[in-house]
Image 1 (cartoon, rainbow, N blue to C red):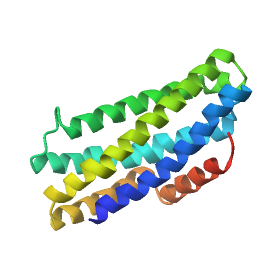
Image 2: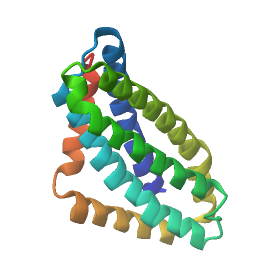
Image 3: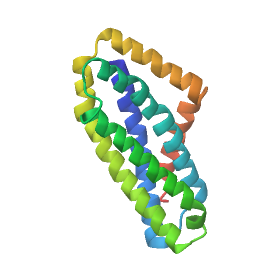
Length: 183
């Protein structure tokens, strides 16, 4: 299914950002430093690419369609994914809140930034594994070819109307740039 393939490709980009974030957490712990510019770009990528784009595609389109096809929204895999999306948002907001202090070397801000960066990366890596290996195969079992076309069009609309022209590519580029740096 094209829609599922697109979501999995986006997971690969998110994983690259997570690698950069883990490096930032390590540097914050070891050297007491966070590069504010790189960290801000990583957080923006997570907010916009991972959440506003990728998670929106899942929450508003894929999960809704799966629920229409009989996959329970509460208490099942969809409920778990929605809960984890919310946990991830909280980690990103906490990192953003302490970033200025961490970049100035504030010890407590550095500790909080590193802790939430590691926790977020761990959460998202596990989350992606569940989606790639459990939820998406489940979707491929319950969705039709017509559903796939509907999803592809809905995904395109999110990218066009909410992300804007070229945003997807910008965040992919930023993800790979962040992964090249040590922190």
